[in-house]
Image (tube, rainbow, N blue to C red; front, side, top):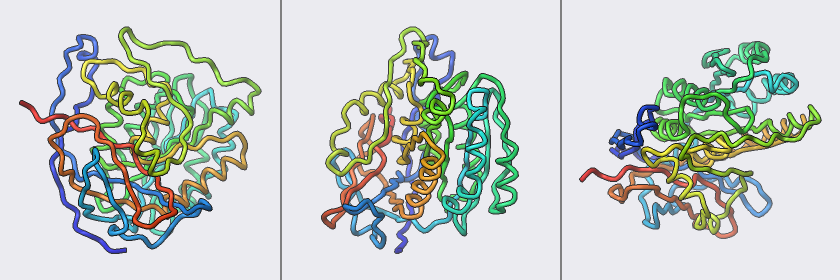
Length: 351
């Protein structure tokens, strides 16, 4: 696949939210540097099969309705994958099911030229193995999984995975796979911090939501979560991720205001479903399952998508427009369905 030149640009992103500013409501956005906007694109035919052989010239990218010049297709670059697994007391009964997926993750997701690192979390964040392509090391890492405390610091663990991926060479594709429930318990890091760092470090986030399997194995319904939002917080709903066509890309419903709430300075946000938010924003997908067979199918689907995915990039020609930039990707050939990231956030230029 033809490679075009990667261009580095400067874009403004909001700084990470700090607790002191949350309390005072006086947090101010600052300008940081980031690279070209990366757009992971999945294209399928009417039968749901991946469509190979497309080039950057077959795509049209719109940023807030403005056509952009595509500068590279990185689809053939090798993968670096960090798998982050919830390992607290809540998931004790399903850890054996997850441990069985070690070989499938290595063969289906990472591939011949890829590498994988494995982390787990409760109130701690532990690295079970650094980056490796050795299937024995990967299997040993999964065998180390043990149920821990009640806490599940999903946000903190996600950020730790992003930071680990940032140690890899920039020519590698950086993918984070979360295997966890769709809720955070105990993090001191905001969703905005996670989204900002994923954008800054070119990380695509996928997730395997274990909540339904957990409920099926334990015979208990999914819990009604208490309203533990901080005073003045804004509620952000979540739900299952569907595969949008180009038409549905044009209609984001409540996602733009929801993301705006996350990124607005000085506003606390309770995120009901972090997995849904992280995957939508970065361009990955969330996969839920109730059985071992469906779990294995999720691994297969994510692997197929990663190896059939187009990763486009562009330098925005409308960087002066502050706020959320909605991305739409169109394919020149009829009859194909497209899924891509919802967009990204950019701070307005200072007065």
